[in-house]
Image (cartoon, rainbow, N blue to C red; front, side, top):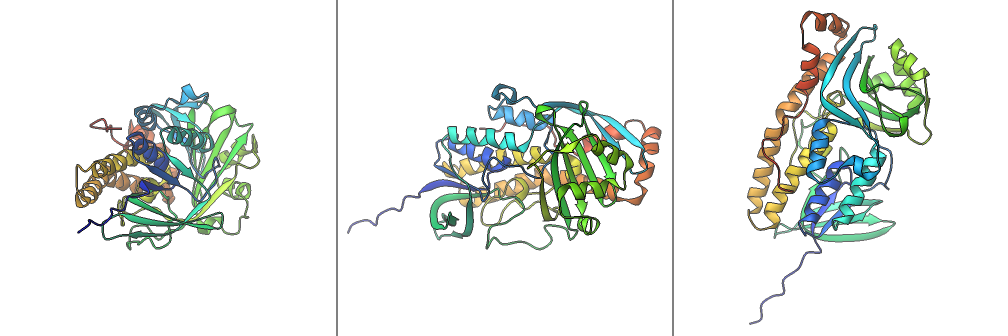
Length: 390
């Protein structure tokens, strides 16, 4: 009796979402020799709602992946301090735990995609995932729509790096995200000189961050509650100007410069995570795993760290070192251990930031030495205990 033919997967890995987490995860797995497909609904490079603040931890992880920003012809800005400005004018200033970088997502995504493709990744943008099915043998079928053409991929593994926009049919566990609806906006400005620091302006319903990026420009990014944004206009500059009406120092800062055309982006509705969500039918990384309050300034670090974890556990599974159940259990456990406490600390600071009593913080910072430094450091990822295999 002849043996049935074996179905060979078209890909070993399909990564859905080509942001920081997805592109670096694809880079690692393609570098191990696995057939890797990286999908995204957007066309790249493009501007994205992001603080564009790269912490020292983020730089460390990029270097582990063999990426030196300065060697790529990119000259990111440098930051070593943080300044918090209250609506009433009070200020808190603190040193950052190391030197941070400012780099636009436009440049960073372009660089990461080039690295991933050079490692052997196949990149398909303007691709909408319309369905994901897990088969009896634990492999997956991924249905997509590309320029009006339906394409189905068969793959041994799927990794979700799709941010807050889940593909159709992806199950959602109740209580994973909070009920408060936020709006995120971003615009580059020219003419605003920012020293080597990140500035955070609190205003009614949220906060606005200003940080330097490459080519002498500043990135202006805001997180605001939906109710405070409604009625303030539909354009990003209108929303930023409306926020500035409740913080005079922010209004003065914005008046120093002008928006750079075609850099305005917004995202809504936005819900912050209550707990990490590391798995549905496959592992999640980046914002799909955890949407942390942008106040923490550590979104890039979370994207990169989760990418390192996700790639490592997936490589163990693909190589046959562990079973499917171990892949799921091991990644879920490590992701929860890594990010749950960070999220709790971040949510506490988020509540403080939105409290009406925040006008008292500058005085409190003067009374309690080191409070400002604690606020900055408490929302950072801890140092890596081991160097991930990449």
